[in-house]
Amino acid sequence: MSANLDSDRVRWPGSGSAVPGRTPFGFYDDDPKFTSECSSSAVWAAIRLGYPIEDIELIDLNFYAAFEESVNEYSSQVNQFNIRNNMLNLLGTPANKDATGKAVTGSPLPYVINLSRAYGSEVGVGGNVDWKKGHVDVVAGQQNYDLQCLYDQASGSGNRLEIKRIFHNQSPATARIYDPFSMTGMSYSNVLNEMGFAGYSPAVQFLMTPIFEDLLRAQAIEFNDMVRKSAYSFEIVNNKLRLFPIPNTNYKVYFEYSLESDKEADIFSPGNNYDKVSDYSNVPYDNLKYRTINGPGRQWIRKYFLALCKEVLGAIRQKYSTIPIPGGEVTLDGGELRSEASAEKEALMSQLREMLESTLGSNLVEQQANKAEKSQDILRKVPMFIYIG
Image (cartoon, rainbow, N blue to C red):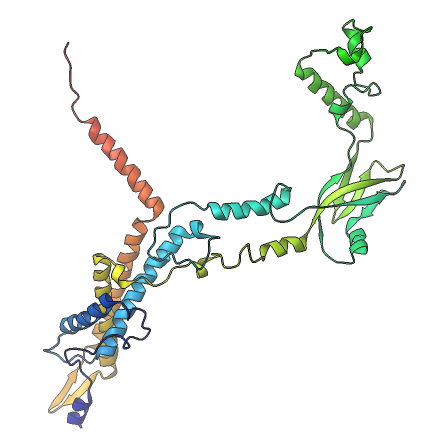
């Protein structure tokens, strides 16, 4: 029985078949550099695991799958770092443009401009949402008006209004500085009388006064309206308008508004956000091309690949922890291999993440600042020439 079991075991024959078509996903099968190193790395890993002195219960499929996974893991870690480092610069940019392996330089200006349009719509200085104009017919003695109800009756729609501006004001104080009927105003005749020019035509006489005098007169008019009169004002709560003072004549009050539905249409318009980078899930980073990975990166991949091979081999050997032989049994080292593989993978992952973290944009700037500061310290100790004239 032991002889049959031994003859049925699958062992590494010393070399494998061609790589293309033998990897699980085929991500890199069209890369000659990958296929070449995948084959040579399988041989190297088998030797590192004890071949040919010991049998290695793995075949080329196991080695090729582990090598592809190692490249995938390296690519994933690098891309995750790049996404975090460049996320703000890429927000709002086209999601169909591959950023893999490319230097992303610039600023988050496209995203900021897009955001500014939305804020511009809110304050009426731009954006893609138009402000509409409307009016309400004010009736003498009626102080309260439901603008939402009036709009729904007129349009037949239930769109929510957002009132932006109500035009219910007195004429500006600057227009009444020279109003002879204003208590604090200053008519042309008064101006001329003060300067002794009463007998001259106002159309050709001018009085030069400091600008602060006009400002003080305008302020006096506004305080007069506020203290001595019922100043024009309003309250608006839930699109219900209340006018002050109580109207004593019929007139129209105009207002500007936008619709909530227009804002929603702008947010989801094809030209605004569709097919644009919105979050971590659609930042355009794909698997790295193996041929573009540098030497240190490939060495990390090889070490991670060896750890994966140990893990798979350990799982296989742990399933058959002991094998009977004539006169006794052989205990396999599956548990030890898996434990060793887990420790190596964790150490390699920590090393890679620490290295990537050190190249974060903010860290590079800090390193450059420290370098410049230390360089200045060195230059201060350079002896200066002494000139004797």
